[in-house]
Length: 270
Image 1 (tube, helix red, strand yellow):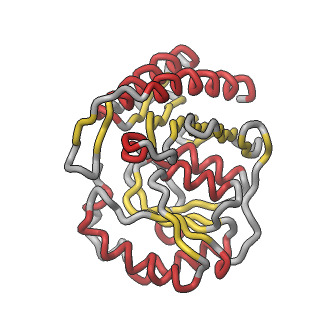
Image 2 (tube, one colour):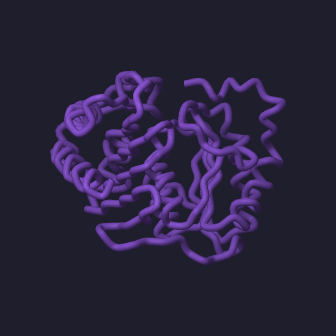
Image 3 (tube, one colour):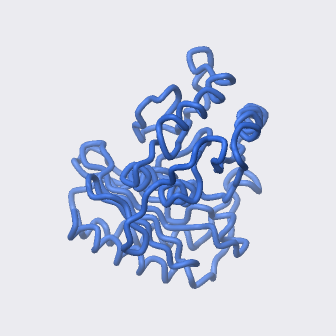
């Protein structure tokens, strides 16, 4: 994996040249909240071509153009060509390229790169996490001094009240709240100790796969509802923290408002 991650970093940096051209057209998927740019498509195509050269017999799970190639093989790449597309389209720097590699359904490699800030977050299973080659780790702050990164399920606003209730209760108990608009980067910020808590509802695997491993290798925790392990095969409810105590406190606020045994699982559909 040590050799492979260096090659993946190089491919991602090459893809970032397309990212940084900032010559793109915008299309709307399902309203103003959910957009795709021509840069998303070009970056994804480039990544798929180059990563397939590294592991010819591989599968892909990608965000754009409903690309979801075979997952039957041992290795599957999980790609978000631009996480934080709305930020990217508006010139806001909180956006990134996210690439993860799964081996037998387990994430073993993660790369999250913000070309606008030249920040390269990486991790390999069992090898720790780094930012631009320097080891990173979660903070030691408690819940009351914690910063919560979150979002309001912008693509499906019928869940906004549910999310806002959870966020409000957590906000009263913690230090403050941030909403950067990129799940992958927020998980990396948690990994580097810039924040301590994370909650989001109905997050796609390409948004969090790489960030999940980076956070885990930095000493943090990210789970589904009630601490369930993440499977990366459906949209997920994410609860993350710098340590288990803070995770469990945040989970109590989530479970106060959400009982998956009583809901119809409609939110888990693609």
